[in-house]
Length: 137
Image (cartoon, rainbow, N blue to C red; front, side, top):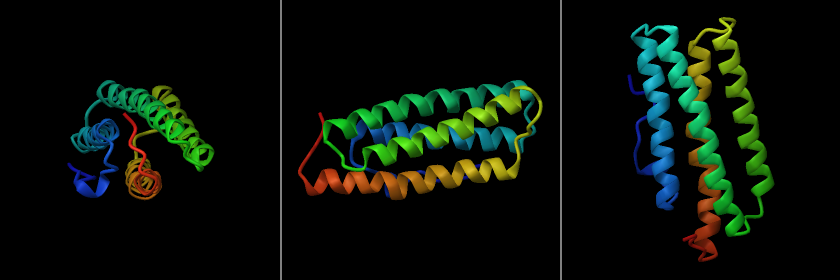
């Protein structure tokens, strides 16, 4: 089940970040597929763990790049990242304790956040980088 179809509309034109975004989209799609196939808690738990861990890696990469280019909205962007990590970590803890199931609402949240964050918020820093001729190396 593909909830998010990866295409060029996600590109921010920074190779490392585009590859990480594609992997995040893939993890969300893998989670949706496992959910639709009725995979057990162990399988779903591993995918959720991967999502949490990889998201943290990706956010560190993105924030490093934004610092390099002196992005004026960096603090706001960091706050959005922190909010997402907190929500997903809370979900992960509830899932691990058996208090929270993998629901359509959770999947919708993940899909909407990934789509909106990349296509709106990340596109804003991509535009800033392009307009100022700043290409991080």
